Amino acid sequence: GDSVTQMEGPVTLSEEAFLTINCTYTATGYPSLFWYVQYPGEGLQLLLKATKADDKGSNKGFEATYRKETTSFHLEKGSVQVSDSAVYFCALSPPGSGNTPLVFGKGTRLSVIA
Amino acid sequence: DAGVIQSPRHEVTEMGQEVTLRCKPISGHNSLFWYRQTMMRGLELLIYFNNNVPIDDSGMPEDRFSAKMPNASFSTLKIQPSEPRDSAVYFCAMGAGGADTQYFGPGTRLTVL
Picture 1 (tube, rainbow over the protein chains, first blue to last red):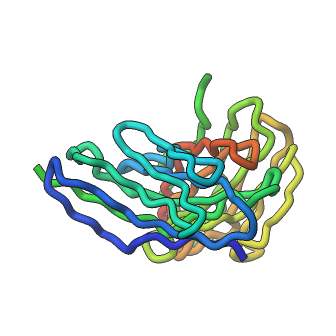
Picture 2: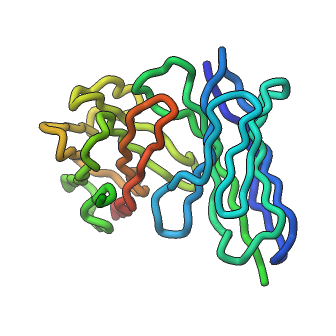
């Protein structure tokens, strides 16, 4: 079945460091891909998404490019801030799925220290 | 547009008691999802509804868990009787499927003593 694999955490970085969180997926066809972020004590919220190959999603300085050839959707940010400390979830929506649930990865906890 | 509302935000109860978690969804989204999040197991889908109809409840851990969506404006997740291993954060989320965003509520933190 469809699945998402993301790098194990926790990831600890200093402020202004470069961030990469790897995400690869397994799915038939071309799913839509998402990154969600969960700040402490809150629910998940959409960070960015891409719906077709080579699309780049971006928001709040974060970017991810839909790479069909490597079935990847890695999250990057050039300069992290303490306020970026959160858990990040990669997810996919199976193609042609209609109203079916997203498939989430296990999440990667990011801690940014000043 | 108000977000997904969940109540209560925190619940502490004793083993054996009945617990009811509530979700008031955003209007205009016809799918509702109940998730559970723990440190050990991560984020797990329990059940989801389309147009108020339960579609897949295979994630519901036991018969002690039940969920209803009597109308488009309200859903409940009930645990009866509760056990300490049910302690978790329970999220309700709304979406329209496909490439649409899922909107999560703030969650209910349940502690069963």
